[in-house]
Amino acid sequence: MSQLTPQSPVADATSAQAHALPSAPRRNPQIPTTDPEAGLKVTEIFYSLQGEALTAGLPTIFIRLTGCPLRCVYCDTEYAFVGGERMSLAGILAVCQSFPCQRICLTGGEPLAQPNAIALMQLLLANGYEISLETAGALSVKEVPVAVSKVMDLKTPSSGEADKNLWDNIDYLTPHDQIKIVIMNREDYDWAKAKIAEYELDKKVSVVWLSPMFNVAAEAEASDVAAPTLAADLAEWMLADSLPVRLQLQLHKIIWADAKGK
Ligand code: SF4
Image 1 (spheres, rainbow, N blue to C red):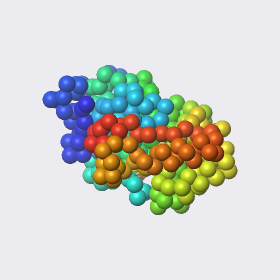
Image 2: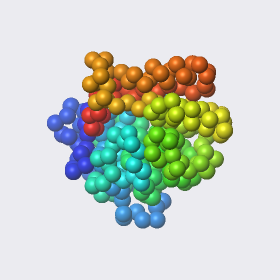
Image 3: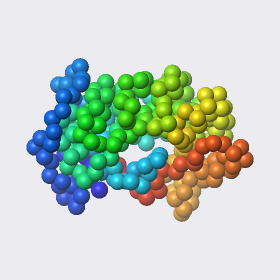
Image 4: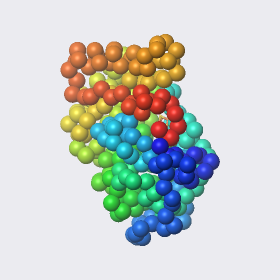
């Protein structure tokens, strides 16, 4: 797998899957942005398997934008809060075109914290990419192009950020989108169950995912088996209630633990 680091978003030329960067994008579509020169702060761009949601297991290019206004207690990408390297939209496109893949996951941090993320999605769509957007649900998704598949979080009480949920966002979700709720305990599960019923979430999106918090370090200490014990409890709760949702385990963490760029 190739990855770009926060210090130097340049493809790792020693990797078997790294590719030389083209000097310019293959096409040069008009970029509808109010500030095309500003570009975006990028923490890393890498090529790996998607670990979550409906495209789990598929080769995917990940663009991790820098910055997030939230501070979830379970955050595993704190390294994306600050730093990064400012790149032009065309430069980001050029890096994407260096990988043998037409599927992109725009993630963070919180990608929507940078307004030019919308212009980047438009540019990538114009170049034929299939895009999913991982967003925390705290910033408006209204301007996200409809062709982009939104995978939107709802933050539970135990995350420490439940008051940041922007409930108006549900009005902009379609059957092309998904909702993910990270569950830390029974209180979170009961909260999620109530919100699913209150907003009829399962009828608004293709899938509502309940994902047990996966603390790789704690699990490794507790057992030789790298599987989250919370998942077993969550599975039983879901079965007892026959909820119209799906259990999600993070594939990349099962395979690569917390390795960056995976
Ligand atoms: S929204 Fe995501 S990136 Fe931001 S603090 Fe929460 S888990 Fe971390």
